[in-house]
Length: 239
Ligand code: ADP
Ligand code: MG
Image 1: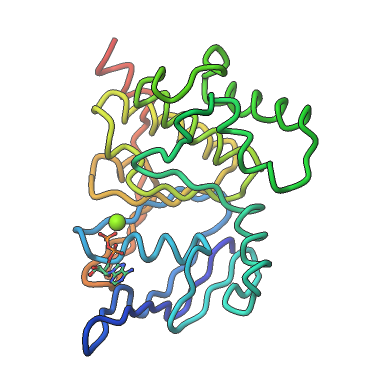
Image 2 (image 1 turned 120 degrees about the vertical axis):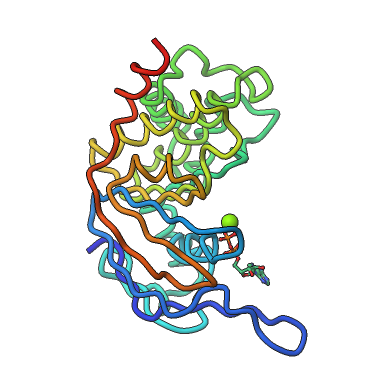
């Protein structure tokens, strides 16, 4: 398994008591799966994603990523695992405003001792993979929302992660651009990248092959289904 959690729990202190942001979640995800996490605001989706992304540690419970027990890792080792195995995509892109697309995509390689020439080469390859070969020297303000999200996806891919984590990746995009991003996710997934995508939108979850549903910090449903083909839908709706 790529991901295995058992009784995964995260409590936050709040006044006198605690908020149970995530409670007792046991779930597995195989390499190469495309999974959506759904639920209303405050249901624990981001908390779950942050734990899976090794950005946070559980209050209780176990989490194995690619066979490694994450709770036992030192902070340094945790950061290394995160850098090697996981790419992140967020609703608001989180790009450096003054850096061009190439420099933004180079970022995750800066602290890994990779020579500049190789960094440039890999960043250019990652940008080509998301269809932005002709936009490498544009800064975020010179790019559309969809193009900015593609830069963020190229940045997430540049270290060759096994797992892509996305928190509402289409939340800031119009429906057509969102569909284009989901078609890109499906292409990456077909090439072997596992994806865990948080969304409150059932239309977005339909492009995954499986949905985990959250409510009040608990995962109460886990369903599998044949995914809708985003590229086909794009053709049908917009050509
Ligand atoms: P979602 O992403 O589904 O909207 P979250 O995982 O962000 O939900 O939040 C789940 C619950 O945990 C909410 O009640 C939220 O207020 C609480 N929570 C999240 N992060 C923190 C934090 N850093 N400190 C205190 N409470 C938090
Ligand atoms: Mg959230």
